[in-house]
Amino acid sequence: MEDTDSELEASENEDEEVYTSNHGFQWNSLPPSSSRRRECNIVTENSGLINGSTTVNTIREMFSLFINSNMVREICEQTNRQLHRTSTKIIEPILAEELLAFI
Image (cartoon, rainbow, N blue to C red; front, side, top):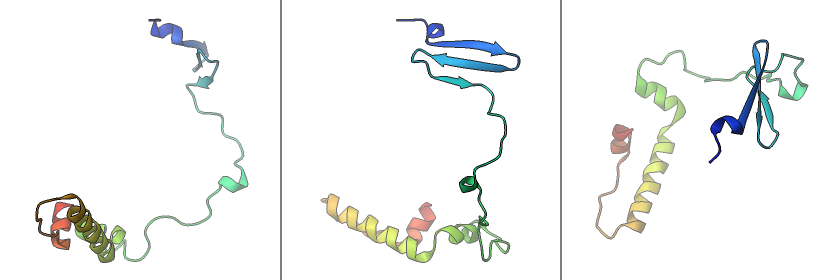
């Protein structure tokens, strides 16, 4: 086996290190210098939660901002369908309350 030092060569230029692989690919230890961003890469929309995110008092309230009751019901239905399809034993269906307790 080759020594791992021969797989990557490092050369120092002041504070920056340039690494070269055996295949000739090079990358730097420092990020590229900042430059003007292309217009297509500029985000102009607000992101984050909307409606009620400032009035959250509990973890469950925060969870419900991301996962609503319809989603929980759908997860339960699909889980129960998969259990019925793959198991030879009679298994009681999973309830939404049980799923939320598990999560």
